[in-house]
Length: 564
Image (cartoon, rainbow, N blue to C red; front, side):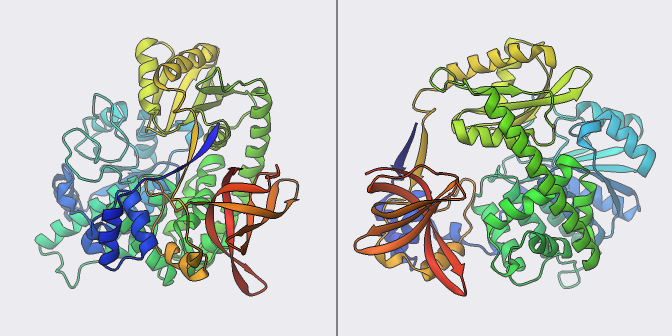
């Protein structure tokens, strides 16, 4: 079941914002999202929380500054998703700007799995001979890997943002806003954000040592296009601090001041960097980078982000685009199989979904889990074969169901079921033995039934209520697009009653509509939905500026509709 709801907001708070010069609709949207202080609207770098709030960041800065001074060799061990790739690129570019001797390695996810494993330490030692390993977007769970590095005389600096287990690795320094006793006000930094903060602290330490002054110091804001991409693509909450990082990155992209790889990814995706939005980063650039880690080798994606050669960047971006098309084909086939397997799935009697097929590709299961979660609105885990009798699962969750905690509970109740697991509240991964799939599915379902009420299993389309006729304009759409919307700061969705004047199905899967409200007609489209609407309908919609034959007109993108 799906229903439309309207976000509540304080009229008084919205009025106070309006009196301070905020557009009346924006004042209402901000207040409904809990933003009532003008300083939280700042998109200037001066508004960033200071690095000193991150636990151990000064220790990391001193250690890295000493290492640069001693000309020690650092190797970045990256993760294989977009956050990991951008964090690696930020680390490589930033550390080189600050005088470090640095290289990187990114594990092939199918051979080595996730994080700093003993096998990765062995590979890194053999291929790169580092004095120091710096992890980005991983490492907080790598207890055995850190031990192996120490055994070999390699120091480890962990930079990560994932939730830690009860025991932390015995690294030289750990910087992670989510580690115990870290009082950093934003727990939502992505891996790339954590690495950017480490660079800020390191630069301050080098300044203190007289290596350079405020005038001659390297400009780290040149890295913000990479920080913005990783932050949006990793779907972390866009709190005030993350919105500043993203806004600054988008500003650089729109001004054409971005790295060649980012420019090439815009071009390969057929998007205009001069009007870049968070949507472009999350749905056009991010998936093309992620495709390399899913199907091939993320070092290709990292090279795209670290090369200064525009020709090379364009060649790689085209390769990434081709890999992404292949990923889409694999995903479509897997989705068809999943829907066939779930043919008898009854949402009324199931709180969760666990599904496995031995033909599936483990690089794509996360996306399929996400699609199934969207379709059925249930916490979903999809599994693919991982060799040696093991299967790998990737999960996506719904509001109010903390996926990593759920897996933790399953493993506490049945210690032999899960080999390993990790992740966040909304996304997590795990490995189990194939012959334990049914037992796991039953244990996971038991947690779902225990934790989720019927009302939580009902999808709610949250809207911002009615939009006055005066704001159905391309100018108002431009104003909305200037803001940084995203995870935890939801893009505006409005809701009104319309008369359905005309409707037809495009390409057998999209509903094209002509709607009328207060005597005005509006074009609208409901993507991926082919069922007709009644003559009168309550419609939740987003505003879109649709350009056709050189003319830009307002179009409504339907999110959901019900008979009015």
